Image 1 (cartoon, helix red, strand yellow):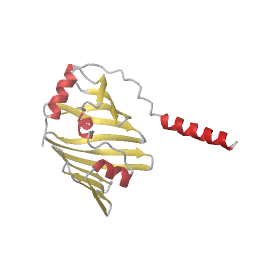
Image 2: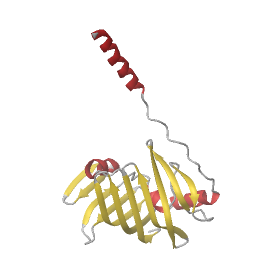
Image 3: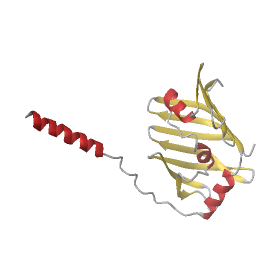
Image 4: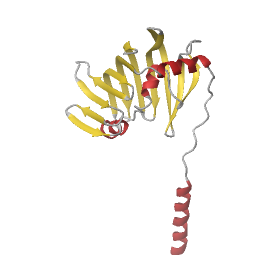
Length: 204
């Protein structure tokens, strides 16, 4: 009896070790030379910034306020302010070192995404968000719907470390010679971000 039980436990252990994460289902992407040209053009811009109203829902609650994002090559400063203008969360990174401030607490790391995840329980892919915010994602995303023949995307589907994200663009506004997102939504594992961008500086 004991031997049979041991064999059963051994079998279950082996089976558990064989379990793998199922592959993500394929995405019906569309080919758009105009989107690729726009993507290459925007990703060459070194410095830009935006301000807008943001609502973030995640597994541990929600955040609402004004988002300030400034990007200069790999360096970024991201701040979330409450309706009274007080900074509730701020991330500063030079591309190598990152610092996170939450209210009056301060944290440092070489990984801003890990800081947000471990301290604020926010699973945000900061390294690729600059492209998503402008509708010019990298190779991690596939275009599934166009907003216009000029190459602005309506929907992107993105795979990040085995997780699927979707970026939906509801409207655009003209900023200089480009049309940049005005309203968008980013949905991923246990997180939804809605953003209405009121001001762009592109490029700085």
